[in-house]
Amino acid sequence: MSSAARRTLVLIAAACALTVGGLLLLPGTSRGANPVLKGGVSGDSSFVISLLDPSGTPVTHLDPGTYTVEVSDPATIHNFHLFGPGVDQKTDVEGTGNVTWTVTLTDGTYTYQCDVHFNIMHRTFTVGTPPPPPPKPPVLKGSVGPGHTISLKRNGATVKRLKHGKFTVKVRDRSAKLNFHLKGPGVNKKTGVSFKGSKRWKVKLSAGKYVYKSDAGKHLKKHFTVH
Image (cartoon, rainbow, N blue to C red):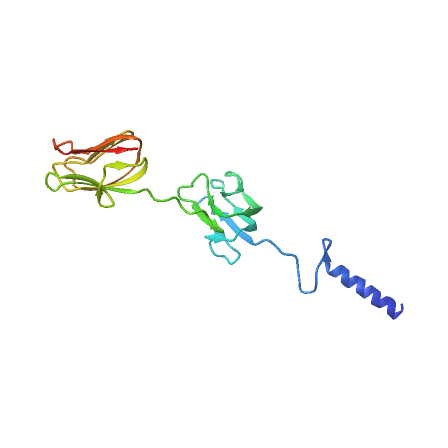
């Protein structure tokens, strides 16, 4: 074989070596692979669930993108369920084995859990920039005692008129002879007459008239309106 023919064969072989799946790869490059997340649950004798990033660290936050999730499920009483925006993948509770999923994660919050024991085998992580949490409900501060006094305030001012919505009511009951009772459309919350201490209530106030009073104090009764 002539030297020219040998050079031609070498060039052809080199071109074949640099071509994979119809894509021409330049020297020093390779096809990109999805990052691999390792998920799994423990065997039947324990209650552990995990999801690890490529470095072996528990996942708490990821960038948006496509990932390969390799799940190990050796248990007949657990499963591995991954769900969130655009994703809902799970193994069988009674089945065992290994599965691989390809998932595309977008901005938001994702959950992985065992559906049977979600109260103890439950974790979440964020992807990208998740939406901000909803604003906390405004706080109303109620007080009864010491002495023959009762009040309900917001930002230091006595409540007379409120816009309908959800509120947190923090009550300080300083009297063992009086109580604090909030009542109106959809709400009926009160402390005990002999109770002394603090209470926290989450309430939803609707349009209408509300009263806060002491059931044991004849003249301790005030009103406000909700619109």
